[in-house]
Amino acid sequence: MYEQDMQRNETIFGKILRGEIPCNKVYEDEHILAFHDISPAAKVHALVIPKKLISSVNEASEDDLTLLGHLQTKIPEIAQLAGCDKHGYRVITNVGPNAGQEVFHIHYHILGGEKLSGLNPKL
Ligand code: 5GP
Image (tube, rainbow, N blue to C red):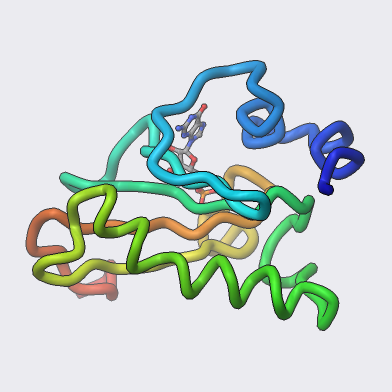
């Protein structure tokens, strides 16, 4: 269904979607893939991506309502599979340089498995 998007996805996540580099998979269906982050920022750190090529929240459009709604409503199940659903977790998506976005294929970080520090890095 997303074959063309997957072929032209030049990001590292494109390589993961095509199976060119391995990932530690948490969940997959027709529309999305979730896997553990290679450099975890918390005890549990998973990433959820759509198979459709969307660079960031900035590039999401009304056409993506169903897809991104599906992704978001799957997050509790993915958090459970990753083992961080019991005591809460954080969901983040970085957009652009000020947020430190490194991979320009939209992804949602799921962070948990421990008490997380506050959101404001200046505090
Ligand atoms: P960003 O900074 O763009 O929001 O997040 C990109 C995330 O992708 C980072 O947390 C980084 O550790 C993760 N990442 C980068 N390359 C790979 C990889 O090859 N495999 C996995 N599993 N995660 C990666």
